[in-house]
Image (cartoon, rainbow, N blue to C red; front, side):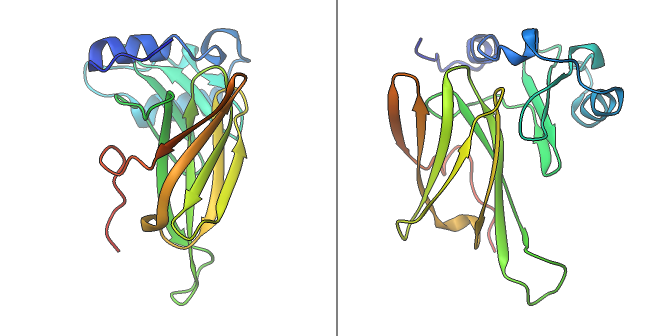
Length: 175
């Protein structure tokens, strides 16, 4: 099913494509509280009873404004826009270990609609990193900073879909 582009229809249409929100195991009370406390906004509340344990150490929940929210060890978000293919990327660049001379590591986590089985991020030098989508969620890490991303590929039951990295939608913070 193609995704619409208006934010109101997009949120409800995409949110309905996360089966883990309705059929998944309930999140632990601690994780449910964490997602509700960190991603609720005035007028857009997360009911902790909607929180579900997704894959990749991620908790999913539905917010009262229709957004599908997620939280994991690297942060969280309630996307209002998705990249083509129904995927949302959260990008975090950190030092690989606690030292100012340590190399950078970029962690990519996110959520993908039902049917997406694998996410592959392609770097400008041609190397890539892969993650399986487990119950609508994924996480992966690459060496270096986030400005090196060139494209991504989604593997679904019906084949592989390639896209240019959506820098306009998910900009990388400057160094």
